[in-house]
Image (cartoon, rainbow, N blue to C red):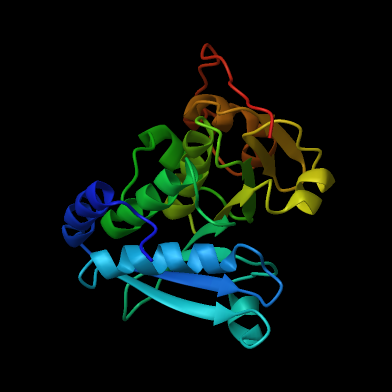
Length: 238
């Protein structure tokens, strides 16, 4: 049974067929995962509309431990965004949970961004991230009903695309409550950086970069670290 309605299917088909380069989505599933079927079905339906520009590979966590270790996946459902064959480049973009509600838009934008290989990040941010020499792990907690969460998740995913040192996870707090409890998530979006910095709300790019100064400062020229803190943060309770 189709998960997407007719009008949306038509719009998605037109967008996906026009992608400049193919994208591969790895979908990790597990035997005890309540939403793995939904996540798999949604991604496979997207691929069926794309005429080959979106390719899907479904991997069971238990049956494919080597691949799970390679992509550092320990829970399901998980979606890993790669470039298409033959290179299958790992951008460091992860989505944990079924991309329902507002987070469906996140997955679509991830696909478009990975296909283009470009982002909307400012030159200053790209320059700062180019000086990274140690890993930067961003975990963005979201919920399907949060209209502000895609902005936070996509900002983190853009940073992952432009830097090999950045991995960015969008995590559905309702599907992984143990992780949400571990990081004290009481509202979304909430971004955890290297288990050191907690950032509340869908902050603008300049504010996020300013928050990262304790990690970035030893590695990047101060001139590349501009900040504009005027825009208000917005949060939603999960």
